[in-house]
Amino acid sequence: MSINHKLVFTPAAQHQTTLTQAFTAVHQFNALESRIFSSSWSRRYALHDPQNPRQIALRDWSLGADIITRPDGKDSRVLKTSLRHYWPSSSSNQFNLGLGYTNRFSDAADVGNQEIKIDLGWQPIFQTSPYVRNFNVSLSFAKWKDLEITFPEKRRVRERKISLNLSNPNVSYFGLTPSLNYTFLDRDANIEMFRVRSHDMFIGLTNAF
Image 1 (cartoon, rainbow, N blue to C red):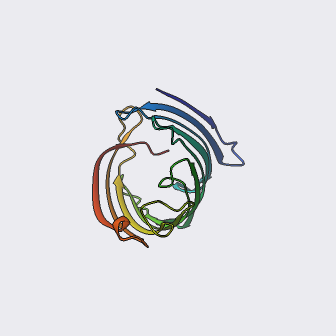
Image 2: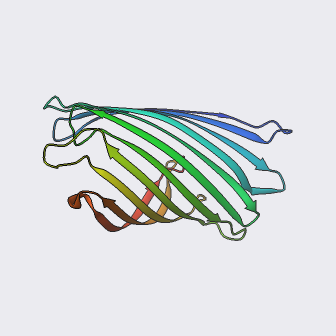
Image 3: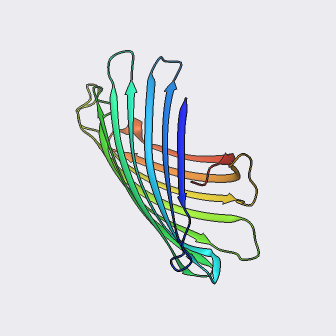
């Protein structure tokens, strides 16, 4: 079950700035009898260039919370916030920088942690092509709050991720656009069993905002 709300303030001619607010609430039940309630509120400021409609400076801010109820009583609460700024350096390039923070509170030692993430993205702009290309590199560090019974020290994880995305916003199915995404993940940890290196490919429909 989900509730979604989106509000768009169209720009005045002299300002050329659009404000979009979105609120989402989702209640999920899974096969393990856990219940997950997620909510998020986001704001996007878009500054348009009248001379070049495809050159837009954006600023996104989001705030979210999750409540996870488990049948064994080890419930979790998650608070997360992120800020991202997009700026066009020229008519053919756009860069973006993001910073995120997540704090997980849990009655289970293997869930509660704090995570900081920073990422840098690049989007080449081709005036004659309808396709949007994105290249993103991210770094994150997470530290677990409690000592897990199985291990002699608190878990710490460092993660590096590279993503490539191709989509066509001119094609839409019920507000979703076809997208192709490739992700390389390299996760290092002080405990060997949590170290991961993977390649993932996604072909499907995505929501741009």
